[in-house]
Length: 262
Image (cartoon, rainbow, N blue to C red):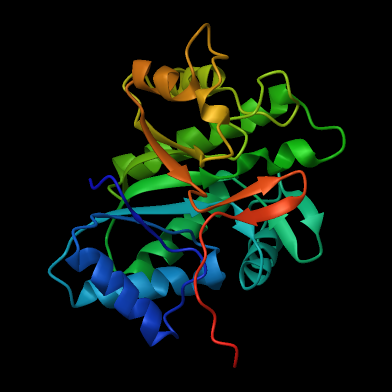
């Protein structure tokens, strides 16, 4: 796996420029592509599928599950009407919901594989499960219970050959462990071990850039998050390398020219 990956947020199969960018990355030696089912309402996965279908490159594919927005609002309604994924649904707004319920995961993996034009995924991540902790009355005990239930489903997907491994992409891995919305790596690994001794929980993803350095705070008995992950044999993937969130809002760490006509 290459040290640098192609981040597929906000790309779409409707854009020839985005297709050329992905082809250029693959040609330059990038062997990791990171996307999600909700990126541009699935159009990110569709672009990757279209490019790889006619390509000799076979990169590691990462996708994620959890967000319910755009077309997925109709999907969750249809599942709920059929009596599926009704539990553990996080209602954020009329236009945004979240779920890591096994029924929703089962639905989403098939849609992702179809869009990506592959039979299995290398890495499948729960996408920001901490959304539950933003709701009134949420508890850490319930949070990790939901993650454990999702891990059990992920192991089932591995057994069926739909994914090779799984993990969590969480913005709150890097937060102080005492914060209510934080995600504790030790507890998460414990959940994976309780599901299966030889589990397939292999990856974590979290923000890191020149300003957001929480992953280097030594809050795990002297270890930082990256060191702790390594003791568990986990691989780490960072996101937000070129922008960050501050008390003043979003800050871009890279600049590029913008055509004034647009």
